[in-house]
Length: 451
Image (cartoon, rainbow, N blue to C red; front, side, top):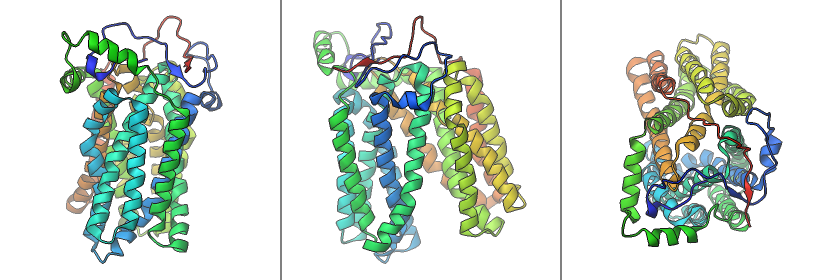
Protein backbone atom coordinates (compact mmCIF):
# COMPACT_ATOMS: atom_id res chain seq x y z
CA UNK A 1 0.00 0.00 0.00
CA UNK A 2 2.76 2.45 0.94
CA UNK A 3 5.08 3.17 -1.95
CA UNK A 4 8.26 5.09 -1.46
CA UNK A 5 10.60 5.34 1.51
CA UNK A 6 11.15 8.00 4.13
CA UNK A 7 13.96 9.45 2.05
CA UNK A 8 11.64 10.42 -0.78
CA UNK A 9 9.24 12.53 1.30
CA UNK A 10 5.48 12.35 0.94
CA UNK A 11 4.18 10.60 -2.13
CA UNK A 12 1.56 12.60 -4.00
CA UNK A 13 0.37 9.68 -6.09
CA UNK A 14 -3.05 8.13 -5.39
CA UNK A 15 -3.09 5.39 -2.79
CA UNK A 16 -2.44 2.06 -4.48
CA UNK A 17 -4.09 -1.17 -3.41
CA UNK A 18 -1.47 -3.53 -4.83
CA UNK A 19 -0.44 -4.92 -1.47
CA UNK A 20 2.10 -7.69 -1.53
CA UNK A 21 1.61 -10.67 0.73
CA UNK A 22 3.06 -14.18 0.92
CA UNK A 23 -0.21 -15.70 -0.25
CA UNK A 24 -3.24 -14.32 -2.02
CA UNK A 25 -6.00 -13.55 0.43
CA UNK A 26 -9.32 -15.22 -0.23
CA UNK A 27 -11.74 -12.76 -1.81
CA UNK A 28 -13.83 -11.05 0.77
CA UNK A 29 -16.37 -9.34 -1.37
CA UNK A 30 -18.16 -6.26 -0.17
CA UNK A 31 -16.97 -4.50 2.92
CA UNK A 32 -20.15 -5.35 4.74
CA UNK A 33 -19.80 -9.10 4.20
CA UNK A 34 -18.95 -11.12 7.29
CA UNK A 35 -15.36 -12.37 7.46
CA UNK A 36 -14.37 -14.92 10.08
CA UNK A 37 -11.17 -14.96 12.08
CA UNK A 38 -10.31 -18.20 10.28
CA UNK A 39 -10.49 -16.40 6.95
CA UNK A 40 -8.31 -13.59 8.28
CA UNK A 41 -5.72 -16.14 9.42
CA UNK A 42 -5.85 -18.03 6.11
CA UNK A 43 -3.68 -15.24 4.68
CA UNK A 44 -0.06 -16.00 5.53
CA UNK A 45 0.69 -12.27 5.43
CA UNK A 46 -1.43 -12.01 8.59
CA UNK A 47 -1.00 -15.47 10.07
CA UNK A 48 2.78 -15.22 10.47
CA UNK A 49 2.78 -11.81 12.25
CA UNK A 50 0.05 -13.12 14.57
CA UNK A 51 2.20 -16.17 15.34
CA UNK A 52 5.23 -13.96 15.87
CA UNK A 53 3.50 -11.65 18.32
CA UNK A 54 2.17 -14.66 20.22
CA UNK A 55 5.66 -16.16 20.54
CA UNK A 56 7.24 -12.86 21.57
CA UNK A 57 4.56 -12.04 24.13
CA UNK A 58 4.65 -15.60 25.44
CA UNK A 59 8.30 -14.95 26.23
CA UNK A 60 7.46 -11.58 27.74
CA UNK A 61 4.82 -13.23 29.92
CA UNK A 62 7.31 -15.89 30.98
CA UNK A 63 9.81 -13.27 32.14
CA UNK A 64 7.49 -10.64 33.66
CA UNK A 65 6.54 -12.42 36.92
CA UNK A 66 10.11 -13.34 37.83
CA UNK A 67 11.82 -10.01 37.14
CA UNK A 68 11.10 -8.44 40.57
CA UNK A 69 12.24 -11.65 42.26
CA UNK A 70 15.35 -11.80 40.09
CA UNK A 71 16.15 -8.21 41.03
CA UNK A 72 15.71 -8.99 44.72
CA UNK A 73 18.13 -11.92 44.38
CA UNK A 74 20.89 -9.33 43.98
CA UNK A 75 20.06 -7.94 47.42
CA UNK A 76 18.43 -4.72 46.22
CA UNK A 77 15.35 -3.06 47.71
CA UNK A 78 11.83 -2.80 46.36
CA UNK A 79 12.51 0.55 44.70
CA UNK A 80 15.45 -0.87 42.77
CA UNK A 81 13.36 -3.88 41.78
CA UNK A 82 10.73 -1.56 40.33
CA UNK A 83 13.51 0.24 38.44
CA UNK A 84 14.22 -2.98 36.55
CA UNK A 85 10.59 -3.11 35.43
CA UNK A 86 10.39 0.53 34.37
CA UNK A 87 13.75 0.56 32.55
CA UNK A 88 12.39 -1.59 29.73
CA UNK A 89 9.33 0.62 29.24
CA UNK A 90 11.33 3.85 29.48
CA UNK A 91 13.90 2.69 26.91
CA UNK A 92 11.10 1.69 24.56
CA UNK A 93 9.43 5.07 25.06
CA UNK A 94 12.62 6.99 24.26
CA UNK A 95 13.38 4.97 21.13
CA UNK A 96 9.85 4.84 19.66
CA UNK A 97 10.13 8.12 17.69
CA UNK A 98 13.43 6.92 16.20
CA UNK A 99 12.33 3.36 15.47
CA UNK A 100 9.59 4.40 13.04
CA UNK A 101 11.81 6.42 10.68
CA UNK A 102 14.44 3.67 10.85
CA UNK A 103 11.82 1.22 9.60
CA UNK A 104 10.89 3.57 6.75
CA UNK A 105 14.55 3.88 5.83
CA UNK A 106 15.74 0.27 6.03
CA UNK A 107 12.61 -1.83 5.64
CA UNK A 108 10.41 -3.93 7.90
CA UNK A 109 12.27 -7.21 7.46
CA UNK A 110 15.73 -6.01 8.47
CA UNK A 111 14.40 -3.92 11.36
CA UNK A 112 12.10 -6.62 12.74
CA UNK A 113 14.83 -9.26 12.75
CA UNK A 114 17.40 -6.85 14.18
CA UNK A 115 15.01 -5.78 16.90
CA UNK A 116 13.98 -9.25 17.99
CA UNK A 117 17.58 -10.52 17.98
CA UNK A 118 18.51 -7.49 20.10
CA UNK A 119 15.78 -8.36 22.61
CA UNK A 120 16.92 -11.99 22.72
CA UNK A 121 20.59 -11.13 23.13
CA UNK A 122 19.88 -8.62 25.89
CA UNK A 123 17.70 -11.17 27.70
CA UNK A 124 20.43 -13.80 27.47
CA UNK A 125 23.04 -11.36 28.78
CA UNK A 126 20.72 -10.27 31.61
CA UNK A 127 20.50 -13.93 32.62
CA UNK A 128 24.29 -14.14 32.71
CA UNK A 129 24.82 -10.81 34.49
CA UNK A 130 26.72 -10.92 37.74
CA UNK A 131 25.56 -7.57 39.10
CA UNK A 132 22.28 -5.70 39.29
CA UNK A 133 23.46 -2.63 37.29
CA UNK A 134 24.29 -4.94 34.39
CA UNK A 135 20.84 -6.51 34.58
CA UNK A 136 19.27 -3.03 34.38
CA UNK A 137 21.54 -2.11 31.46
CA UNK A 138 20.69 -5.22 29.46
CA UNK A 139 16.99 -4.94 30.24
CA UNK A 140 17.01 -1.37 28.97
CA UNK A 141 18.74 -2.51 25.78
CA UNK A 142 15.93 -5.00 25.35
CA UNK A 143 13.46 -2.12 25.37
CA UNK A 144 15.26 -0.56 22.40
CA UNK A 145 15.00 -3.82 20.46
CA UNK A 146 11.35 -4.23 21.37
CA UNK A 147 10.57 -0.75 20.06
CA UNK A 148 12.22 -1.50 16.72
CA UNK A 149 10.58 -4.92 16.36
CA UNK A 150 7.05 -3.72 17.02
CA UNK A 151 7.46 -0.61 14.85
CA UNK A 152 8.45 -2.91 11.97
CA UNK A 153 5.65 -5.39 12.64
CA UNK A 154 2.97 -2.67 12.82
CA UNK A 155 4.31 -1.02 9.67
CA UNK A 156 4.22 -4.38 7.89
CA UNK A 157 0.58 -4.91 8.84
CA UNK A 158 -0.34 -1.40 7.71
CA UNK A 159 1.11 -2.22 4.30
CA UNK A 160 -0.29 -5.70 3.70
CA UNK A 161 -3.72 -5.56 5.34
CA UNK A 162 -6.54 -3.91 3.36
CA UNK A 163 -8.17 -1.12 5.33
CA UNK A 164 -11.57 -2.80 5.26
CA UNK A 165 -10.04 -5.71 7.18
CA UNK A 166 -7.84 -3.75 9.56
CA UNK A 167 -10.24 -3.76 12.53
CA UNK A 168 -10.69 -7.53 12.36
CA UNK A 169 -7.01 -8.16 11.76
CA UNK A 170 -5.92 -6.06 14.73
CA UNK A 171 -8.51 -7.81 16.90
CA UNK A 172 -6.89 -11.14 16.06
CA UNK A 173 -3.45 -9.60 16.55
CA UNK A 174 -4.28 -8.22 20.00
CA UNK A 175 -5.98 -11.46 20.92
CA UNK A 176 -2.78 -13.39 20.18
CA UNK A 177 -0.78 -10.80 22.12
CA UNK A 178 -2.97 -11.13 25.21
CA UNK A 179 -3.06 -14.93 25.05
CA UNK A 180 0.73 -14.98 24.88
CA UNK A 181 1.11 -12.81 27.97
CA UNK A 182 -1.50 -14.77 29.93
CA UNK A 183 -0.06 -18.17 28.98
CA UNK A 184 3.49 -17.05 29.71
CA UNK A 185 2.93 -16.29 33.40
CA UNK A 186 2.32 -19.86 34.61
CA UNK A 187 5.07 -21.21 32.35
CA UNK A 188 7.54 -18.68 33.76
CA UNK A 189 6.64 -19.64 37.30
CA UNK A 190 7.20 -23.35 36.64
CA UNK A 191 10.46 -22.78 34.76
CA UNK A 192 11.83 -20.54 37.51
CA UNK A 193 10.79 -23.04 40.18
CA UNK A 194 12.52 -25.96 38.46
CA UNK A 195 15.63 -24.35 36.96
CA UNK A 196 16.07 -21.09 38.88
CA UNK A 197 15.28 -17.40 38.42
CA UNK A 198 17.69 -16.95 35.52
CA UNK A 199 16.18 -19.69 33.38
CA UNK A 200 13.11 -17.75 32.12
CA UNK A 201 15.45 -15.13 30.67
CA UNK A 202 17.26 -17.81 28.67
CA UNK A 203 13.95 -19.27 27.50
CA UNK A 204 12.83 -15.80 26.41
CA UNK A 205 16.06 -15.41 24.44
CA UNK A 206 15.37 -18.69 22.66
CA UNK A 207 11.83 -17.62 21.75
CA UNK A 208 13.18 -14.35 20.35
CA UNK A 209 15.64 -16.29 18.20
CA UNK A 210 12.79 -18.49 16.97
CA UNK A 211 10.78 -15.40 16.06
CA UNK A 212 13.69 -13.97 14.09
CA UNK A 213 14.07 -17.20 12.13
CA UNK A 214 10.33 -17.29 11.38
CA UNK A 215 10.39 -13.72 10.12
CA UNK A 216 13.39 -14.35 7.87
CA UNK A 217 11.85 -17.52 6.51
CA UNK A 218 8.30 -16.38 5.83
CA UNK A 219 8.01 -12.57 5.63
CA UNK A 220 9.82 -10.63 2.89
CA UNK A 221 9.51 -6.87 2.83
CA UNK A 222 6.02 -5.88 1.66
CA UNK A 223 7.31 -3.56 -1.09
CA UNK A 224 10.35 -3.24 -3.29
CA UNK A 225 13.05 -1.12 -1.72
CA UNK A 226 14.97 -1.02 -5.00
CA UNK A 227 12.20 0.95 -6.68
CA UNK A 228 12.21 3.35 -3.76
CA UNK A 229 15.98 3.79 -4.01
CA UNK A 230 15.82 4.60 -7.72
CA UNK A 231 12.97 7.02 -7.14
CA UNK A 232 14.96 8.67 -4.38
CA UNK A 233 18.04 8.95 -6.56
CA UNK A 234 16.09 10.60 -9.39
CA UNK A 235 14.43 13.08 -7.04
CA UNK A 236 17.40 13.76 -4.77
CA UNK A 237 17.90 17.28 -6.02
CA UNK A 238 14.30 18.34 -5.57
CA UNK A 239 13.05 16.50 -2.48
CA UNK A 240 14.35 16.28 1.11
CA UNK A 241 16.27 13.13 1.95
CA UNK A 242 17.24 11.16 5.03
CA UNK A 243 16.34 12.67 8.37
CA UNK A 244 15.24 15.93 6.71
CA UNK A 245 12.48 13.92 5.04
CA UNK A 246 11.65 12.30 8.37
CA UNK A 247 11.31 15.70 10.03
CA UNK A 248 9.03 16.86 7.23
CA UNK A 249 6.90 13.73 7.63
CA UNK A 250 6.61 14.20 11.38
CA UNK A 251 5.48 17.82 11.00
CA UNK A 252 2.99 16.84 8.31
CA UNK A 253 1.56 14.10 10.51
CA UNK A 254 1.23 16.43 13.48
CA UNK A 255 -0.69 18.90 11.33
CA UNK A 256 -3.29 16.23 10.54
CA UNK A 257 -6.20 16.51 13.03
CA UNK A 258 -7.23 12.89 12.44
CA UNK A 259 -3.73 11.69 13.31
CA UNK A 260 -3.74 13.81 16.48
CA UNK A 261 -6.98 12.08 17.44
CA UNK A 262 -5.32 8.70 16.89
CA UNK A 263 -2.44 9.71 19.18
CA UNK A 264 -4.81 10.91 21.90
CA UNK A 265 -6.83 7.72 21.58
CA UNK A 266 -3.79 5.46 21.93
CA UNK A 267 -2.46 7.48 24.87
CA UNK A 268 -5.77 7.29 26.71
CA UNK A 269 -6.22 3.58 26.06
CA UNK A 270 -2.83 2.57 27.45
CA UNK A 271 -3.15 5.12 30.26
CA UNK A 272 -6.31 3.41 31.53
CA UNK A 273 -4.95 -0.12 30.95
CA UNK A 274 -1.71 0.46 32.86
CA UNK A 275 -3.04 2.91 35.43
CA UNK A 276 -6.53 1.54 35.98
CA UNK A 277 -6.37 -2.19 35.36
CA UNK A 278 -2.74 -2.97 36.19
CA UNK A 279 -2.16 -0.53 39.07
CA UNK A 280 -5.31 0.68 40.82
CA UNK A 281 -7.37 -2.50 40.50
CA UNK A 282 -5.02 -4.76 42.51
CA UNK A 283 -4.31 -2.00 45.05
CA UNK A 284 -7.99 -1.22 45.57
CA UNK A 285 -8.91 -4.90 45.72
CA UNK A 286 -6.29 -5.58 48.39
CA UNK A 287 -6.40 -2.41 50.48
CA UNK A 288 -9.90 -1.13 49.80
CA UNK A 289 -11.88 -4.38 49.81
CA UNK A 290 -9.52 -6.74 51.64
CA UNK A 291 -9.41 -9.23 48.76
CA UNK A 292 -6.86 -12.02 48.48
CA UNK A 293 -4.49 -12.31 45.54
CA UNK A 294 -6.65 -15.17 44.26
CA UNK A 295 -9.73 -12.96 44.38
CA UNK A 296 -7.93 -10.14 42.59
CA UNK A 297 -6.80 -12.60 39.95
CA UNK A 298 -10.41 -13.68 39.55
CA UNK A 299 -11.48 -10.09 38.88
CA UNK A 300 -8.75 -9.80 36.26
CA UNK A 301 -9.97 -13.04 34.69
CA UNK A 302 -13.50 -11.63 34.43
CA UNK A 303 -12.21 -8.49 32.69
CA UNK A 304 -10.00 -10.44 30.29
CA UNK A 305 -12.77 -12.90 29.44
CA UNK A 306 -15.13 -10.03 28.69
CA UNK A 307 -12.52 -8.47 26.41
CA UNK A 308 -12.10 -11.67 24.43
CA UNK A 309 -15.85 -12.04 23.96
CA UNK A 310 -16.17 -8.74 22.08
CA UNK A 311 -12.69 -8.30 20.59
CA UNK A 312 -13.36 -9.77 17.15
CA UNK A 313 -17.02 -8.71 16.78
CA UNK A 314 -16.04 -5.13 17.59
CA UNK A 315 -13.21 -5.19 15.07
CA UNK A 316 -15.58 -6.58 12.47
CA UNK A 317 -18.12 -3.86 13.21
CA UNK A 318 -15.50 -1.13 12.85
CA UNK A 319 -14.65 -2.46 9.38
CA UNK A 320 -18.29 -2.67 8.31
CA UNK A 321 -19.90 0.44 9.78
CA UNK A 322 -16.91 2.66 10.56
CA UNK A 323 -14.52 3.41 13.41
CA UNK A 324 -16.57 6.10 15.17
CA UNK A 325 -19.81 4.12 15.74
CA UNK A 326 -17.77 1.51 17.62
CA UNK A 327 -15.30 3.74 19.43
CA UNK A 328 -17.64 6.39 20.82
CA UNK A 329 -19.88 4.06 22.89
CA UNK A 330 -16.89 1.87 23.81
CA UNK A 331 -14.87 4.80 25.16
CA UNK A 332 -17.89 6.23 26.96
CA UNK A 333 -18.57 2.90 28.65
CA UNK A 334 -14.92 2.42 29.57
CA UNK A 335 -14.78 5.85 31.23
CA UNK A 336 -18.04 5.32 33.13
CA UNK A 337 -17.25 1.83 34.41
CA UNK A 338 -13.66 2.70 35.31
CA UNK A 339 -14.84 5.75 37.27
CA UNK A 340 -17.45 3.65 39.07
CA UNK A 341 -14.89 1.03 40.12
CA UNK A 342 -13.67 3.23 42.97
CA UNK A 343 -17.19 3.18 44.45
CA UNK A 344 -17.48 -0.61 44.50
CA UNK A 345 -18.47 -1.77 47.99
CA UNK A 346 -17.80 -5.48 47.55
CA UNK A 347 -15.64 -7.83 45.46
CA UNK A 348 -18.72 -8.98 43.56
CA UNK A 349 -19.62 -5.43 42.53
CA UNK A 350 -16.01 -4.77 41.53
CA UNK A 351 -15.97 -7.92 39.40
CA UNK A 352 -19.19 -6.84 37.70
CA UNK A 353 -17.86 -3.37 36.95
CA UNK A 354 -14.58 -4.76 35.64
CA UNK A 355 -16.50 -7.17 33.44
CA UNK A 356 -18.41 -4.25 31.92
CA UNK A 357 -15.19 -2.28 31.59
CA UNK A 358 -13.66 -5.31 29.86
CA UNK A 359 -16.48 -5.33 27.33
CA UNK A 360 -15.83 -1.64 26.67
CA UNK A 361 -12.03 -1.91 26.44
CA UNK A 362 -12.29 -4.98 24.21
CA UNK A 363 -14.61 -3.05 21.90
CA UNK A 364 -12.13 -0.18 21.72
CA UNK A 365 -8.92 -2.23 21.52
CA UNK A 366 -8.53 -2.45 17.75
CA UNK A 367 -9.80 1.07 17.07
CA UNK A 368 -6.57 3.06 17.50
CA UNK A 369 -4.55 0.85 15.12
CA UNK A 370 -7.41 0.68 12.62
CA UNK A 371 -7.66 4.48 12.55
CA UNK A 372 -3.88 4.67 12.21
CA UNK A 373 -4.08 2.50 9.10
CA UNK A 374 -6.73 4.84 7.69
CA UNK A 375 -4.64 8.00 8.07
CA UNK A 376 -1.01 6.79 7.76
CA UNK A 377 0.59 8.31 4.64
CA UNK A 378 2.22 6.71 1.63
CA UNK A 379 5.87 5.93 2.32
CA UNK A 380 5.68 7.03 5.94
CA UNK A 381 3.97 4.17 7.75
CA UNK A 382 7.01 3.53 9.94
CA UNK A 383 7.20 7.14 11.08
CA UNK A 384 3.47 7.15 11.82
CA UNK A 385 3.80 3.90 13.78
CA UNK A 386 6.75 5.27 15.76
CA UNK A 387 4.74 8.29 16.91
CA UNK A 388 1.69 6.11 17.55
CA UNK A 389 3.67 3.75 19.78
CA UNK A 390 5.47 6.61 21.53
CA UNK A 391 2.22 8.15 22.73
CA UNK A 392 0.84 4.73 23.69
CA UNK A 393 3.96 3.99 25.73
CA UNK A 394 3.75 7.48 27.24
CA UNK A 395 0.29 6.64 28.55
CA UNK A 396 1.55 3.27 29.72
CA UNK A 397 4.34 4.90 31.74
CA UNK A 398 2.43 7.91 33.10
CA UNK A 399 -0.83 6.13 33.93
CA UNK A 400 0.54 4.05 36.84
CA UNK A 401 2.57 6.98 38.20
CA UNK A 402 -0.40 9.35 38.21
CA UNK A 403 -2.84 6.69 39.41
CA UNK A 404 -0.64 5.62 42.31
CA UNK A 405 0.06 9.20 43.37
CA UNK A 406 -3.64 10.13 43.15
CA UNK A 407 -4.68 7.10 45.21
CA UNK A 408 -2.24 8.09 47.94
CA UNK A 409 -3.22 11.75 47.93
CA UNK A 410 -6.97 11.70 47.25
CA UNK A 411 -8.16 8.12 47.65
CA UNK A 412 -9.25 5.45 45.20
CA UNK A 413 -12.48 7.13 44.09
CA UNK A 414 -10.68 10.15 42.72
CA UNK A 415 -7.84 8.02 41.37
CA UNK A 416 -10.17 5.87 39.27
CA UNK A 417 -11.95 9.01 38.03
CA UNK A 418 -8.59 10.46 37.02
CA UNK A 419 -7.83 7.30 35.05
CA UNK A 420 -11.08 7.77 33.13
CA UNK A 421 -10.57 11.46 32.32
CA UNK A 422 -8.24 11.03 29.30
CA UNK A 423 -10.61 8.41 27.91
CA UNK A 424 -13.43 10.96 27.92
CA UNK A 425 -11.17 13.51 26.23
CA UNK A 426 -10.30 10.95 23.54
CA UNK A 427 -13.98 10.14 23.08
CA UNK A 428 -14.80 13.81 22.46
CA UNK A 429 -11.95 14.07 19.96
CA UNK A 430 -13.14 10.95 18.12
CA UNK A 431 -16.67 12.38 18.01
CA UNK A 432 -15.39 15.62 16.47
CA UNK A 433 -13.15 13.88 13.93
CA UNK A 434 -14.59 12.91 10.52
CA UNK A 435 -14.91 9.17 9.92
CA UNK A 436 -11.50 7.89 8.80
CA UNK A 437 -12.63 4.67 7.10
CA UNK A 438 -12.97 5.41 3.40
CA UNK A 439 -14.72 3.14 0.94
CA UNK A 440 -12.89 2.84 -2.35
CA UNK A 441 -14.69 1.89 -5.52
CA UNK A 442 -14.12 -1.75 -6.33
CA UNK A 443 -12.09 -2.41 -3.20
CA UNK A 444 -12.26 -6.08 -2.38
CA UNK A 445 -9.72 -6.22 0.44
CA UNK A 446 -7.60 -8.79 -1.36
CA UNK A 447 -3.83 -8.83 -1.06
CA UNK A 448 -1.75 -9.53 -4.11
CA UNK A 449 0.71 -12.41 -3.82
CA UNK A 450 4.35 -11.84 -2.94
CA UNK A 451 6.58 -13.32 -5.62
